[in-house]
Image: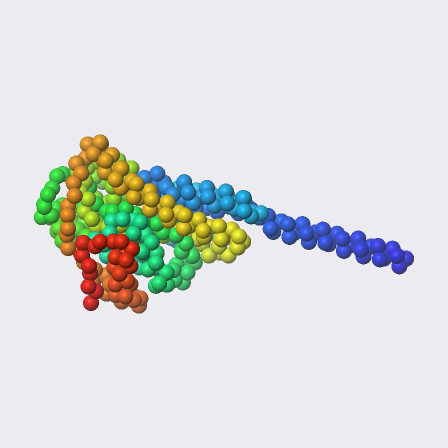
Length: 352
């Protein structure tokens, strides 16, 4: 009888061990489905295009090859999951796991991430402004805290756009010719038009073509790659390179609840691939800046360069200070690092 009890105990222990092993194996070999979204379509915009071409396939392949897990992405670009003005909130709520959003459309909530818009004319090179601005973000942690403290997200990536210019439906050579003309821009770059006396209209890439065609406005502030990619040159035949500069303004974030559920091995790969993504965005920006200008010419667009214009930064530095963050120190450091990294600013600001 005693032997039977011992055998039963051993058998029960064996079943429990097998069950425990099965549970452990299941936990180790989890599969994760991640919804990744952006309000812009992929192909015309490097920040979204490189999510589709680089980030998503790289993470998927590496997780499968280097861990016991699998990751599957549900990709929703062009507003198919969340539109331009919903990505931040959708990621906050967990409707989106990884969100790519333009801070230009969150002028209040992501005000601080519009830093480069408030410091124009430093450099049009995304290979300079991308690394420089990300270094600024590391030195001043409020760029990260705005997401973690307020929106249940972790800031993981942000590649730089190429240099901004101005597309118009009419030829012009002097800034006074823009006085009173309705010109569209994303929002934080609207003040760039103040010195010209233009009538400012807030807009976004998804509506520019129709707005230009119908006469809602007669010009738009935009860099050349999407100007060509969205075919704006079909309705606005003049493009002027203005030297306003490259900006880092498309943060990619991950919902904190999603992030907490991912194994460290998967997090490590995602983090490593965000660095690859940043470089890919900036490489595309550099390549497309020149090719887009050439393609615009082939499309029949007249392309010219403006030259130097006076910038403005003091007011925005003060607005950062008013929000309780060191705006003056940030702006000074941005200029200092940009020059150290190879920028040759049209104007070297003195922040009072």
